[in-house]
Length: 360
Ligand code: NAD
Ligand code: ZN
Image (cartoon, rainbow, N blue to C red; front, side, top):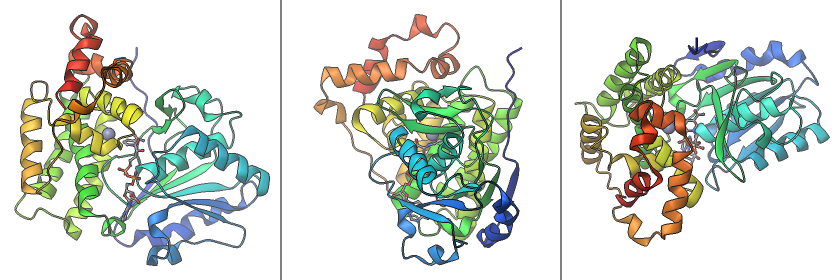
């Protein structure tokens, strides 16, 4: 039988101010390996009050990462691993503090500390040979669900694909919604929409089931309250809700799958380096014939939040660029299988996908 056997997060803390438990949570782990921690932290927090609250001890290493330069790459993870091993040795653990990008870097580097060679060797399902070192995630923006995902998505020279195995999920996450208060409005919206799209794609497909559906429905309810409800907007109450929705949306996917929008988003990322959540929004608005009510509700969310997405982008794209994106999307068969059905190859060709991209 091919039922998924899911490795969950070992431990979860949720609540405002819970970030301050980090020190005591990692204290017992500090006796492992060379006895120091590696902190990878979103560059946004340099000079911010949170920086002083990070429990950095004498031999610890802290690396600030500017995630605005590009999404996490295999090269970046390999270099970080090589540098730390050469200079400090094997850490007791890794703590990632930031959005999906930083959390994926933390998960990936934890695995790469104990697996030889380049991370490009392990992009895929169950290719990682040994468990990584202890890793703990602290999300600071809600939506991707990378905090609970079984994969660490990396862009390599050839593909954007995750390191996915049972050792990828964090040993511990600290969900402190207070940390998301400073997220700029546009990023709050786009990243939040990743959760919304995860839920819709999870539900609209052949792998949907009672387990994935229950998580998706609850996460959708929370998204509606946050983005179109009477008390919609970036408030502390809604920050709490969106952090929970982010987690639930991804738990839904764990037993289901993403679909057409995510397949297209990977194409946009590889060819135009579009960011994951924004790329999803660019594609999703045009998929009404596949995700009817979901897309209509998405458009209500855009309107209510005064977000205007660019149109007619494909006018400036070459046929080669469109063809390249279509190939990236086509090569994600699990997504098409879920969205269209097991006979998807009879219904979807490279040309069909090119036409989808031409809608943008
Ligand atoms: P991100 O980590 O790329 O960060 C987006 C922006 O938000 C950055 O400018 C960052 O500095 C800023 N930011 C983060 N927290 C902030 C805060 N508290 N205050 C102010 N600014 C803040 O954003 P993301 O959308 O969470 O993650 C996108 C990445 O996640 C992509 O690389 C994508 O591939 C990956 N992803 C992974 C999974 C998974 O299952 N592992 C799922 C979806 C997406
Ligand atoms: Zn996503």
